[in-house]
Amino acid sequence: MKRVVIGAMGAAQVTKHFLPGVLLIVPADRDDIVKAAQDYLKSGGHLSGIVLSEEIPTSNAVLKLAGTFPCPVLVSPLDSYTVASRVHDLIVKIRPDDTQKIKLVQELIAAHVKLDKILEAI
Image 1: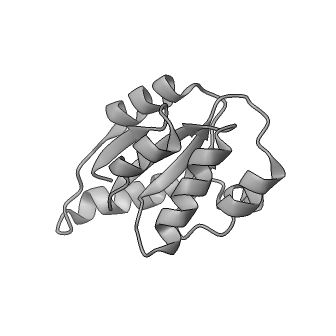
Image 2: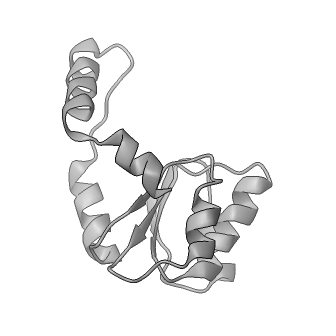
Image 3: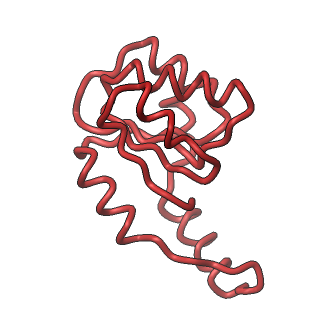
C-alpha cells in the first residue's frame, strides 16, 4: 500500500486518485464509487484494497461487486476518517530481506485474522 484515498467526493473525482498501491476507504453506501472502482479494476487497474466503512447497510449489489474484485475488500463499522487514521498509524515498512518481521507478521495474521470470515463476507 502506497497511499490511502477516502472516497468522500463524487465518483468522477475519486477515480482520478485510483492508482496502483492505493487503499480506497469509502462509506458502504457509496455504490457509485464502488462501481467506479469496479470499472477501474476491470480495465486492468490495480488497488491495494477497499474498505467499506461505517455502520451503513451495504446493498446486495455492492456486496456482489466486491466479491468479484481482485483485491481485498473489508467491511468496517468505523467511519472513514477513523479507518484512515488507524491505517496511517499502522503503516509499517517490511523489506523483503527482513525475515524476522515477515515471520512475525505471518504469525500475527495466522493468530488473529479470520480469513474464512473475510471470504464469507465478500
